[in-house]
Image (cartoon, rainbow, N blue to C red; front, top):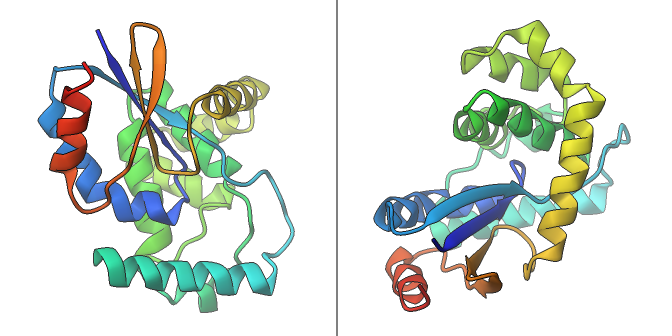
Length: 201
């Protein structure tokens, strides 16, 4: 059976912009192929404040996505939070949630917290609170997210993602009969992506 791999980062703003289109595509594909999520790891662990230039670049990116796709963002984040260029904690959070069959719930919780509620998913305290919201036990979650096992899983998955024919996040990769092919991401039109995938399986 062919497989579609969705490579994302929980704190990737274009992934947030693609969310609605991706969900429609995924629903349409149904049982026609297997779908696998992989985290790509946008930015490694850092306790340093995000440089001003990077903050300005990301603020402009949010505005561009808002204008092009109509995706909502809460720009208060840049005034009330302390941004760090660090997405690995959020990536570990979705891997912990995956162990409990709650990856999709955790991904949405992180995206809503970050983009709508102006919370910082680079902080373990934020992630632990979200874990509790989706029904995970908070202390157990903290132990897991800080474990070497989850960190090893993350590094292995990042390496796997980088070995695929991707260019940034989100990316779609079709695996069919052992061959991997990049599928262009159309942010507004899921049908064109759907037809393209069907023509290759």
